[in-house]
Amino acid sequence: MDEKARSLLLQNKIPIARDIRTAYIMDHMIRDEVITPEEEAKVKSQPTPFERANFLINLILDKSKQAYISFYNALRHEGYKDLALLLKEAANAELSDTLKSSNNGITSYVKTAVCEGGVPQRPVVFVERPEHVHKIQKSLYRLKDDPGWITVYGMAGCGKSVLAAEALRDHNMLKDCFPGGVHWVSVGKLDNAGLLMKLQNVCTRLDQDGKYSHRPPLNIEGARDQLRLLVNRMYPRSLLILDDVWDSWALKAFDIQCRVLITSRDKSVTDPLSGFKEAIHVDSELEHSKGLEILACFVDMEVALLPNSAHSIIKVSKGSPLVISLIGALLREFPNRWDFYLTQLKKKQFKRIRKSSSYDYEALDEAMSISVDMLKEEFKKYYNYFSVIEKDVKVPTQVLCILWNMEREDVEDMLQEFVNKSLLYCDRNGKSFYYYLHDLQLDYLTERNRDRLDVLHAKFVDQYKKHYLNIFPTWKQEDCVYWYRYLAYHMAQANMHQDLCSLLFSLNWIKSKTELFGPAHLIHEFVQYRNILDNQNTKAREHFQEFLSVNGHLLGLNPEISIVQLGLGQPEDSEVYRQAILQAREELKSG
Ligand code: ADP
Image (cartoon, rainbow, N blue to C red):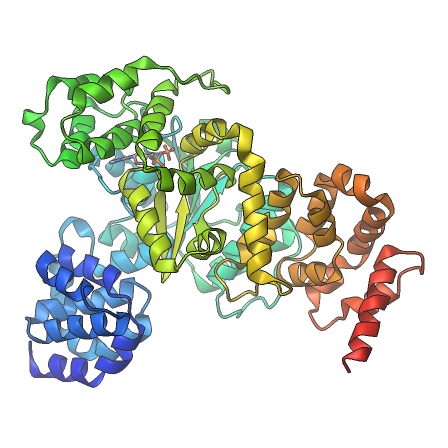
């Protein structure tokens, strides 16, 4: 390592060691082959995070410049951009070389662009499908100079999202066509209120400094205008990726004359839209040789040496990459069980209740059933909680820490086990991790736990209440959006009707939620849970809903407005007035 790099590392050792989490940094460095697994084990054996980081930096000090650059890149990609800046000067001279030397066009520019854009990582075992990727890239090149819609369509679980993400990992394409960056949005099946929240999140993500908006857009029209402004002003020539789109009407909210890549089961989702359009089909079955490759990677064997049952497993799996990955992950743990898993897969004992007319998911159900049964009892208990997460929702680690009352590191270690078994997927966004299941896996899990979903939902509510007591999550917390969006949902599903009323008839909750998201989603909840609320207190439901419809937008637009004052303006026989006066007295008492 040259003098400059060494000096920068020594000068900044303390602030770096104080902040970083070594585990993920070392993943990059092992991949770059600048540290060995033995060295990694030594770092991990240090007792505290600070000592682990210190040990790692000392190791790097004794190594070549390549190790320094790998460390620098790892800091950038793991969300420690400020710390990376401290080392930038010495890394820069070599960076252009790194750019040239990295293979497949995945340069550090690409890594940064996809990481910042929230593009999902490759699955644990990944096989290239170059023909499909090139087709998508060819279409994307057509968006170089003009806006338009590219749709990648095919059956659920056939690998559309993985292919779309892969197509983006190309240096020249990103530089030439999308210098404004790429922005991945998991859309899924949505209703109006869900769509608005999704748009609000996208706007906040694109405008982190609040340069173009100080308040969240209050309706879909407003959100579309804000998105248009943001994309035009801050991210010209960028690409929006809308993953797993079900309905055309949701797409209209993104019709802002920009470049869009869509994944969908439905080729015709873009029919009502105008402008340049192109669609690319992905076969429901993976090519046989690719299936073999996945299995071979999992068991670390040459394809030619795979047993005959490997071929049969692919046939029984109907070439579904999702099913093959589940079985592959099982085989990685028990490499002698080829015939056993094949027999299990063929049993077809699990009968799906909701059957799709167009596709046979039995193989997936079987594979899931084997994988979940194989989990340790303790892990099974935790995994089952994913049955009550709504589809297409990525759950931040913090929600699960609260749910299980566990330390972040323990939660992440356990979830990594699920990820390794292809039972769960993980997205990284800076320092935050978000976990989710494939739709079809969620279907299976929900069916499996059908008779105790309420208990699982209730646990979310109980743990939330224990954690937050009388305060509410704030914007800066990574779990904030989750609770505002899904707490009432969990209460309703858990049949906790009393709690649901207390929540929705709470001026403080209404104020916090409208301040962050506007009134639309709350009003939607009043409509959705009307029967439950009416059973508890019809008058209160009417008063609060009316109050929200008339005043909600004021609260959304101006956080300075006092909800108590607004409440005091209600008729005296109103529940809202009653709560407001109680609060006003409390406030007077406490001065
Ligand atoms: P879709 O978007 O079509 O529903 P995904 O792209 O999410 O499907 O893929 C489903 C799962 O199949 C992935 O999570 C992964 O486990 C597996 N898979 C898909 N494509 C590949 C691939 N190229 N290599 C390895 N596994 C894959």
